[in-house]
Image (cartoon, rainbow, N blue to C red; front, side, top):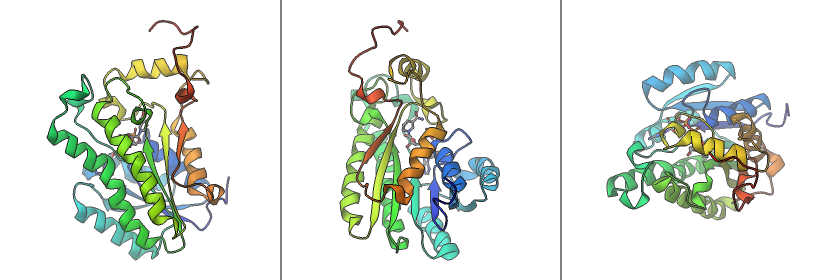
Length: 264
Ligand code: NAD
């Protein structure tokens, strides 16, 4: 795929470590020739992100906590100073209180509901507002979602409600920005063991359930999500917008437990 992204520059938000989905996407885009800028959330993650940036020749443009709009403005100001314009953004950011990613959705608190929606949903729109101004030659915006938006998954709870809203916002943003040749899409990734996923109750059980029941009889890797991300960020997907692309070994097409799946 070398050359596919030659001349394209983009901002990748949401790398925590080398298991992050955003890292899988950044690696694929960089290998295809993209120039990449990365953000990190707080000093602890900076130490993780800097060596990864060096591995792919990416620039680190600063701390961004999406609950603090000034930090979003600051990283976009830095990107504008560096490049003047951008061609793509990757938003791989979500958060909910761990205590509410277990048990019943109905017990969600107002405070955590608002926080989850702000960080996991509104932040994509907040980023889109800034990115639109820098996408003067059109562009591609990509976010990450999960099947828990479509169907009830154990423990996903308020995050499922947030992902449903995120997927709706992908469609609204696609319409708003389409006339400027800016495309907006999401990848619905199957379960992957990342830092964020470790907050979800019984996550290992969910991984095994997917291995037994997905059509491909396995889970997916960040490299596989990265390759579909590369497609959605590149001109290969120039006719695609407002789309939720599943990269889940086919799990979302299955209606019931496989007859040969062991009890787990
Ligand atoms: P991760 O822990 O590697 O990444 C989550 C990122 O969100 C981290 O980099 C963290 O710094 C960032 N973040 C959280 N709160 C933030 C804030 N206030 N400001 C800025 N950044 C903040 O985990 P991941 O699994 O790679 O998650 C990336 C995305 O993929 C998330 O949207 C997640 O919901 C989604 N996703 C994950 C899975 C999975 O199974 N891992 C499946 C489908 C979708």
